[in-house]
Length: 415
Figure 1: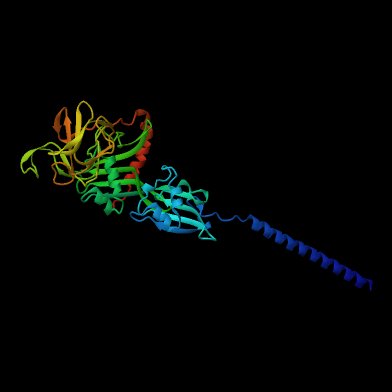
Figure 2 (figure 1 turned 30 degrees about the horizontal axis):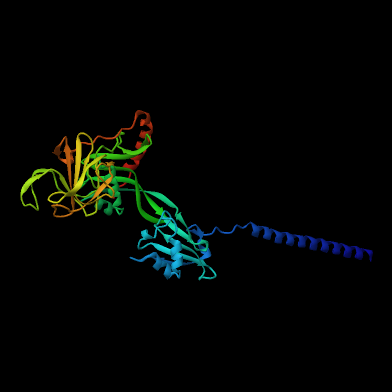
């Protein structure tokens, strides 16, 4: 009998012990689950315009031609008083007069009540926007979308022009303009021939995976008549310039041409048949055919010594004295650069006017003339003194950069 009692007592003890540990384990498991749940971080909110965009209900619109700010706001249900408040912010933050067709507008409302607006956003460009805080008396702030530059490479041959060569390589012709600016002191892009070739390392700007038409050339080479000119960027004396592989600056005292990348329609001549006057006479300049409104640059630094209109000749013209030796004249302009006046000092590559067809002219073009010591000379033969070459102190550092980029350029496969 005692043996049976001992067995029963032992069984009870074992059962209680099992129940105790099972309960504790369950409680520990629950506590562990609570701790684990607490340790899970909430997902980062999706940000746009500097706001958690998913917290709002959004209404979108696009500015149409000749549509005013008031019309946009009225379409969203705002009043004239609301429009007035928006226009009171500083022009440096938002200027309604500069709103352009095609730009996007967004109204952010309460998620639970779409009729309760919180923010109005105007996208100035792909890179910037203005946010109006409706709940704070339409206080305006400008914001910027994150940008990044992505590198690419391209190489190709010229069949007709560098512009078309870029298109044939499926890249933006804007790169042709940038190349003509970099090599403008050493290569006459109006005289390039079929079979010339180029290699290019460049960067393109992106905003939120959207490619922009903004480019930077990181290194380049252009081969013409079995002679290759390299463009290697290097900073010397706090100035970043492009140099050839020998360390000579590609930038000279004068540009090869006063505008970007257009056709020469008439060259320097002592006897040219004038298309309007129908007789032969000297043409001591170079005519560049280009669309009306094409920017015209000063080919070098200097002072504006004349600006005016010649009805029976050059139409709107600007004359610049660069030094005691050279003066240049730019004729048939459609208009002058804003604010340009006689006595102004201009810099190389500064816009001084725009291509037109004023005066005696059969179509839009620039008549460009150069005088050396008072005598007309062929603008295509003007000498250009380069800027300072790489110094001896910087030679070793430049050579490292140069060797690396030249090797990279040479290994870009031709399209």
